[in-house]
Length: 426
Figure: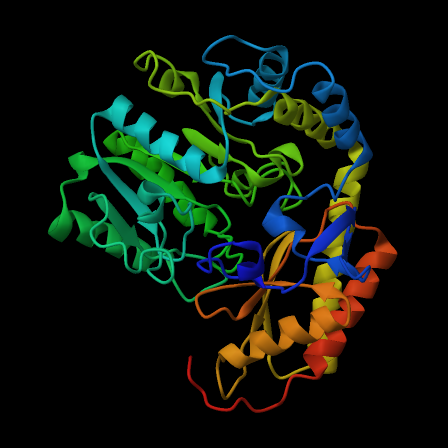
């Protein structure tokens, strides 16, 4: 389909449909067919498609000032948004920040900041992590295919260790042992300037980092002068049912990466951090032509207004409770032998498809995605073997729409063939 529109075939398309309209948790294609949207632009629409307050803010700003590069001259939407965001982030120290165009660019700038502040170039990342597709960010990702394949040598000084999680078989001790081995075999700890981690992995399958390991990691970074970067590009802005997922872990980061839902669908992301880290850098070392565009900032200000309302958190809590109770019911009633586990926390949940005999199999997810779409539900895969359904509907999804979507998913799960063709993966 893409080649008809001169789009490179390097893209992969999860759903071969062309969308024309969206309203909260529903979208319509060019054939006027309606779908319940459990993808949300891959976590960009935590507050729904075309939220009226966001649309109003965009429309109003577009009538007064569409663009100005903040490096050239300041503009009011940026100056309004940044102090509000810094005040909203629950980091005890005074915060400062910068805006970027996307999550990958936020990642790149965070690594630049870590290098400039520490004088060190090494970075520790985690297996299964995802931090972007740009050339420096891609090496932080915790898997090769498809992100690193064919690229040749990448920027050095990146080291990966296992991601300990109650949602996986990786323990705190395994991660600690890998960290100790790293400094015994690979590099001196004094070469490491930053550790980057998602508190809840996105593409990795909505796995929550072990809170006890996160606290160990915070102490480790403090002891060695290493900056701790929390990537909340997907897990932030309410996705887990609270504004920021790192609060589930009982620690604070030095730098926080935000994006996706920060501006309700407009391209915007941010690096927020302790003022002692963000300030005192070389003049001109940070910035960008479109970074912090006025219209995107206006949308982001509207999002902050929404996040200060009790109603959205009540809706998120209802959604989280509904997912948990529904999954428990499905397990108890034996909806499908492929229904294995529920990963994540709060409103950021993944459904693991793993058969007790056959393990995981790529044909199962393909079946689920296709059958759900044909019945009017859009889903998104994740996980090492593409065996985890990541649920990303708006936190503002209407209860009847949520029920209708889950009813479709139940029907699709119950229709998965009991036996896979071959147990290719485990």
